[in-house]
Length: 189
Image: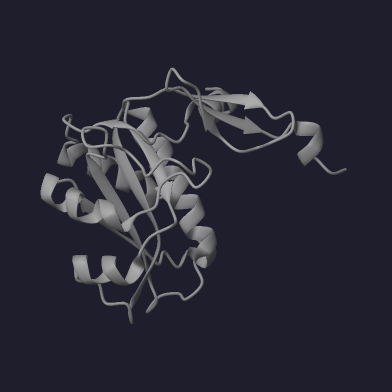
């Protein structure tokens, strides 16, 4: 298995086939992959809420921000919205500082979804007070580090070497381009 190829192929997806729902079995499989990844001090403070019914997805959608670099795009249009979400929670009774755990688990969720043909988008721009109320989450006990949107891809996303700007962009044919800094620029030795 060439992990570099998997990492290059597992891209953020922001437009989905909203009609193709995600099974409960697939949701459990994705969450289970994140459950077993490394955790600082093995404290395992992360919890997950799976939302896959259409009503729950529709209610959560307006409380998330999409694609900051695409300034003239408000997010997926109806029919292209996620078919499910995983809301990640940090249980503050276990740990107050779990940013590293959240990052590791977020990418594990993406990789697990990608492995079964499901696209994903990690969203950190969340209207947390509204989501706490919507989902009945106790903010005294839980923090929301991120939400992962899931669905079957309805767009292509490709990597390219950055030559100037690193802002991602879309071409007229709807392909999402993601410039990455060259290895020589990120490797300091």
